[in-house]
Amino acid sequence: MAPPILKLDDIFLTFGGTPLLAGAGLQVEFGDRICLVGRNGSGKSTLMKIAAGLAEPQSGEIFRHPSVTIRYLHQAPDFEGFDTVQAYAEAGLGPGDDPYRVVYLLQHLGLTGEEEPQRLSGGEARRAALARVLAPEPDILLLDEPTNHLDLPTIEWLEDELVRSRSALVLISHDRRFLENVSTATVWLDRGQSRRLDRGFAHFEAWRDEVLEAEELEQHKLGKAIEREEHWLRYGVTARRKRNMRRLGELHDMRARHRGHKGPQGTVQATAADAKESGKLVIEAEKITKAYGDRVIVAPFSIRVHRGDRIGLVGPNGAGKTTLLKLLTGQIAPDSGSIRLGTNLEIATLDQKREELNLDETLAHYLTDGRGETLLVNGEQRHVTGYMKEFLFQPEQARTPIRDLSGGERARLMLARILARPTNLLILDEPTNDLDIETLDLLQEIVAGFAGTVILVSHDRDFLDRTVTSTIAPANPETPDGRWIEYAGGYSDMMAQRRGALADKRRSEKGGKAKSSDASPSPSEPQKAKGKLSYKQKFALENLPKEIAGTEAKIVRCEERMADPELFSRDPNSFAKLAAELDTLKTALIRMEEEWLELEMLREEIEG
Image (cartoon, rainbow, N blue to C red; front, side, top):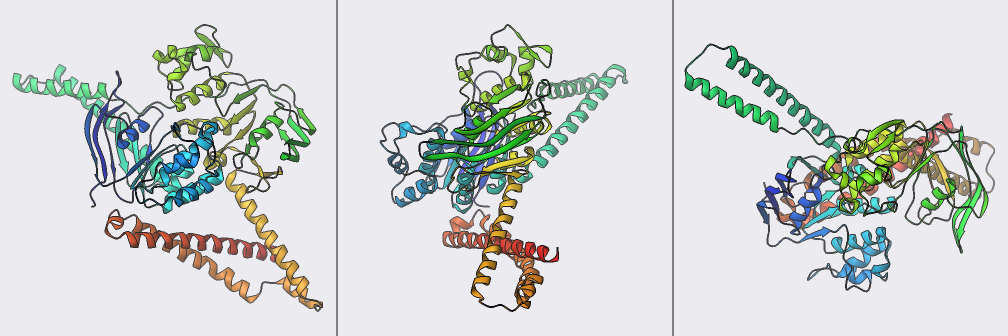
C-alpha cells in the first residue's frame, strides 16, 4: 500500500460544550477521489480547513508530504488586490505551471477573465475560485461545495474535468449525482468521529444504515448485560467481596458507556402546514413574453398549471429561469400575453439569495415574527424552542443572531419558517443550496408528498428526478433564445425525450437527403426502404449491444487500473495514457448508445 500524501489522525477540536471533532481522521493517497459527508454542523468544512492548513486543531497528528501541492476552494474568495478575474486566477499558479490552462478554464466556466472581481455575482465568484484552484493541477484538491451556484452544463463539465484530473480529490457537496459520478471513496463524519468506506457515494447510504443498525444492536446488548449484572448484584449468591467489587466496577463501566453513548445526529421532522385547497387551475399563462432591451428572456410561452402539479425549471445561468418563475407567479408583468392566477392561493417562497434574512435578528424572533415565544403550526400553538428542535436547532440557539449560523443552518431556518405557514403553492428557487443530504431527503419527501402545487428552480439532477412531474427547459440550452419547452417527468426523463427528438431529427434529415439524391426512384423502392431495415442496420442493431457491453467492461478495467494508488507515483505516463484512453472509451460509448437508440426507434416505427 502506498504511503499517504496527507494524513490527519485523532483530530480533536471544541469550541466549548460538545466537541466538534473528537478523534476524526482523513487519509489521502495519490489517485484518491474522496467525498466527505455528514450533517450540517458535523465539522466537514472545519476538517477540510485543517487539512489545508487554514485551521489548527487542539490536538491530533497532521502529516503533509513536503513535496505535495494542495489547493483549497474557498467558499468566500478574497479578490483584494486583483483588477481582473484572470489576474486572480493566475495568482494560483506555481513555478512551471501552464498559464494557458487559466484561459482554458475561464472559457469553459463562462468567464472572459476581464471581469472586475468586485462586480461578480455569487455564481461568477465561485467559477473564478474554481479556475484558480484547478489551474495548477495540484497533487491534492480540497473542494468545499464546488457545485453551489453552478448551472447544470457547468456541473457536468466539472464532473468530467475532475474525473480526468490527476489530482487527488476531497469533496464536500450536497449534489448526490455529482458525488456518485466523481467519488471512489467516502469518509463519513458523524458525532466528531470519521469512518471510511473504500467505495463511492452511491454505496454510502446502505453502508451508513448498516453501521447504525449494528450500533443500535450493540447498545441493546449492552442494556441487557446491565440488567443481568444488576439482577446478580441484588439477588445473586454472595461471593467473595473482591469478586463482588470487580463485578460492581464492571457494571459502573457499562452504565457509563451506555449513558455516554450518543445516537446519530437527529433527523429533521417536519411537514408543510396545510392551507385551504386552491382552485383546480392554479396558473394559466397565454403566450407570455419578456425581454430586456434586445435580449429576449421569454418568447411566446403558454402553460396551464393544475393543483398537485410539481414543476421544475432548469437551464444554464442567465437563461431566465428566475424571470420565468416570477412571471408565472405574478411578481412581474409580461410584456405581452396574459397571466391568470387561480383562487384561494396561499404562496410560500424560498428565495435563492436568502435576501429575506435579517442577519441581526435572532432565530426565535425570525420564526415567530417577533410575536412572543410561540408560533401557530397547522392550527396548533407551538413553543418556538420545541419547533426549532424539529429542524436540529438547540434550545440555546433561540437567542442566537442569524449572522452566526452557517449557510446550511440559514437554509434550514428559512425552510422551518416556510413550512410553518399555511400554503398551497410552494415556490422554491434553488432550495438545495447548502442543505445536507439528510435535510435534502426531508425536503424531497415534503415536495413529493405535498398536497398543493410546487414550482421550483434547481440544478440538482437527483432532486429533480425524485420530485417533479414535469420539467421546463430552454429549447436551445447552449444558446438560450427565449423559447421554453415543457417535458413530462424529471431531469432524466427530459434528457431521454431530447435524445429521442434528436434521433427523429437525424432520421428526418437522412430521409430528406435520400429523396433529394434520387431523382427518379421506382415506385417500389420507397416502400422497400420504409418497410424494413437494411442489412447493415440489422447487423448494427444486433451487434451494438455486444460492443456497448465490451466498451463498458473496458471502462471498468481502465478505472480499476487508475484506482491503483501507486500507479501515478510509479508511472505517471501510464496514468496519463489510461486517462486519455478512458476519455476515448466514454466518447465511443455515448456514440454507440445514441446509434443503437436511433436504430431501435426506427425498428419500432417500422414494426409499429
